[in-house]
Length: 484
Image (cartoon, rainbow, N blue to C red):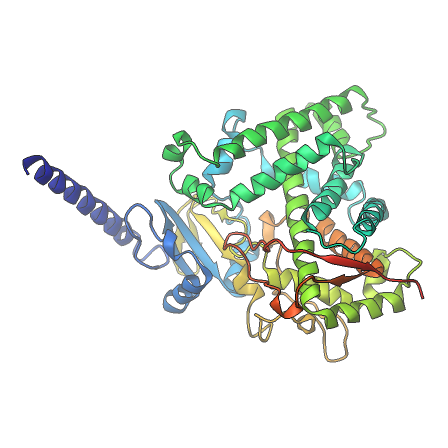
C-alpha cells in the first residue's frame, strides 16, 4: 500500500502542476491573445479540432480565437473578413512558415528552410517564363491529356479506380516542367516515384503524423508507419538528385530546357541561396503541390459528376457546342464555357481540399484588431469557413455550379473563392493547377460519359479527414462518346 500511495500522490501532484501551468498560460495571455476554449493538459484542444467545434468556438469567441495543439499555440481565423484582413491587409506580418515538426525533421539535416521570398519569386518567374499560363505549358498538359484518354479507353468499359490514372497524368505534367520530359506510365522509376508520393501523402494525413506534430521528441524514437515518411523523402531526394546531375552534365546556359536548367544557371551565377539542396527542396515542393492536390481534385470531381449525371450532361452539351468532338480543348475556350468553368470552380469549393488552409505564422509580435499575437505563433486560416459561407454560397453543403453563375448564366467570380489560400503563402502552383483542372476535365468529358457501378444516389461524397478532404476510393466506368 505504501508504494502505491506514494505513486498516487506523485501522479496527483504532476497532474495538478500541469493543470496549474495550463491555467497560468491561459491567464498570462488574457487581454492580449484572442480568447478560446479551455485547453486540456498535454493534448490541448486536439480532440476539439473539427469543423463543428471550430464553428462553435467562433460563435462563442468571435472570428479570431486561440486553441492549443499539445503545447503549440494556434490562432484560428474564421470567415472571409478575418482571413483576408490577416493574409492580405497584413500579409507581411502573417507570412512566416507555420510550425510543423514533421516537415522540420525532413529538412533538419540540410540546414534551415531557404530564404523563401527570393526562391518563391524565382520559382513563379521561371514557371511563367517556361510557359505557366502560356501555350507551351498548355501543350504539355494537352499532350498528357492525350495519353490519359488512350489509357482510359483501354479500360474497355470495366470498373476501375481512377486514382493511379490521375496521379500519373498530373505527375507527368510536373515532370515535363521540372525535368523537361514525361515518363511512360509503366516506367519503373516513375511508378516508384508515384508510389512514394502517394504513401507520403497518405501518411501525412494519418493519426501517426498528428501525434508526431504534437509530441515530436517522443515520436522521433517510437517505431511506426510515420517513420516511412522520412525514409521515402530520402528516396525521393536521391531520385531528384540523379535527374539534377544529368541536367548539370548537359546544361546549355543559353537555352534552358526546364525549371531545373533555370535553377542551375542561377546557381552558376553565384547566388548563395541557389544551392543544390534548395533545388531539391523546391522540386519536391512542386511535386507535392502539383501532383497530390490536382489529382485529388480531379478524382473528387469525377465522383461528383457520377453522382449528378444531369450536371455532367450540361457540360457535355457545352463542350459539344463550343469545342466539338474533333478539336482539342484549350484555355481560349474557357471564356465561352461559363457552365463548365462554374463546375470546375464548384468542385474546388465543395471539396474544400485543405479545410484549415496551409498553416502560416506571424513574423513578429503582431497587433491584429485588438489582440497581440506573439512572434512565431502558428495561424490556421480556416478556408472551409470561407468556401462554405452561406451568405455568399446559399446552401453551401450542396454541390451546385449555380454558385458561380449569375442570373443570365454568365460566369460569376467570387472573392470568397480561395481554395489555394491567398497572400504571400498561397499555393505556388495555383496557375498551373487551374489550367490542368480545366483542360484535363474537359478532355475527359469530351471523350467519355461517366458511369457508376452503383446507383448514383448511393455514392458517398463524405470527406475522410479534417486536415485534407480526400475522397474515399471508388470505382468508375468510362463509356466512349461516339462522334455524331
